[in-house]
Image 1 (spheres, helix red, strand yellow):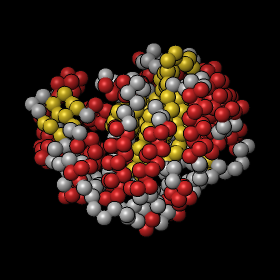
Image 2 (image 1 turned 90 degrees about the vertical axis):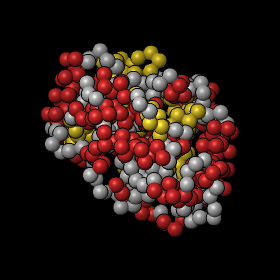
Image 3 (image 1 turned 90 degrees about the horizontal axis):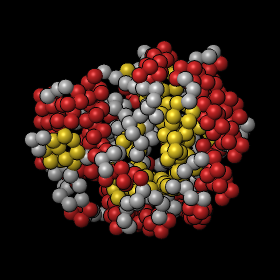
Image 4 (image 1 turned 60 degrees about the horizontal axis):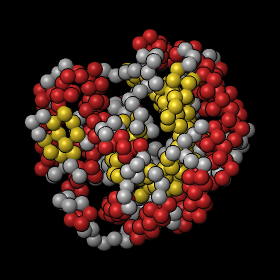
Length: 470
């Protein structure tokens, strides 16, 4: 589906040719971690995870934790969804799930010790607001019994606007949540119908207004471009509505159509998807609209108002990236709870069982539900530092890596520096004697810049499992 017949590249992306767009319209990781989750192995077991927790208790117990809780349930199916979810209207299932979350928390406390401080909590899904107010209260009580919530921390929850009202938002504020993320995707009724997610704009505007009354520190809105029935013209109208809504943060994602991996997407007709040129136009339109409205382009898929903590962290070079995306919190261990949840402890990554039956079975036998993961090598750790510097700061000082990891950067990354010369010719990076800088143009392709340093990807011929970088 396409409505745009020509694309004025000089206006949208100065200096970017059609040939360059075609060349870099490729699939690649989002780098919420390095190595990426597709590199996890079954050889990383519960015993591996226990060892990582014991090492943390011995040498890093005083460092704050981040906690992620995955709540997989949704009342209805969104056709674009690529999350691990369970579609059901049987709310009694969440009562059982809470009991198992409590068991998983108890296992962690047995190995970490009670009273660990957390500076960041995120409830994701699925739809966390599938839980009733009472169940959310019980979950927070579990966590507060076992962990100390740091003053000034980030405590956020993903909210399906169709499942909450003003009273529910007040309850979330009373529980201690100070950040909300509303899943909007698109305000256009035809697009909403095509993806099976009907939610009137008036409903979202009312909820955001209520969130401000209850003094949530930050309200985020998620948008997706490249959905079926979207056109550059219809998306401009959605962008204008978002600007009028004026959330503190905006997360803008390109839709990745991978029906061979995600069954719900098989209900989307490829003929209704916008053409690649239209997707580029939508992206460029969003960038110009949000920048003109005063938002800071934090990077890749995030915008924030200048006084938001995310924009401040960007200015001060304190931005980080974890499995939930960009973060203002220091690079800390992440304990993840729930089915399919991915965590990080020390130099390890781990993922829980992907089905609720397997998740329950592990916990019924008193075991952590870890089913796969990865112990990072020294090379992985070095490359992670390089990739995260590119993704978060858009710049890299070679000396910082040399001092931290006792290596000669230009020798260690000789092949990568040679490969970057091709990106320099297309004005995506500036290579200097002591470092590199991603250009304004390069931010459109920042994943392509990071991919140069991805050793695992160099020999990978199956990149189609990743989303397109544009």
